[in-house]
Image (cartoon, rainbow, N blue to C red):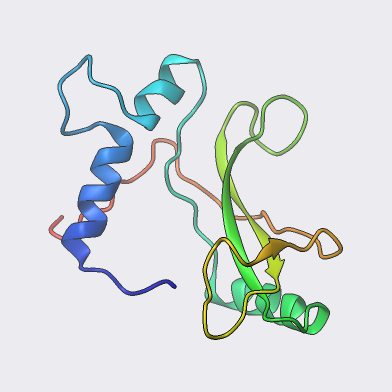
Length: 131
């Protein structure tokens, strides 16, 4: 189950993704994405209001312990607003027991629409609580 994390942990996770603190030839998801010719935003913004509306939609449609799984994606060509840009989308899940909420027990609910309308910055802004 999710939990709040220290800001410095979040900063290190962002650095691990982008490869910003790694030597030039080291591997990171962000470096691999950029070397393949895709724009790596590595951050997406959603307003609290729109997330609350989407969560209400999911709760209204799914009664069996609804949840959200976050997928990484790429618009490619002709899917979304930005060709070859990375994104995330929220996929509704159902079915986990309240006693054991983990990724194994809950399944995607394909009868409920996923969500993607966040905005990302190009270039992205790294997560740095000390900036």
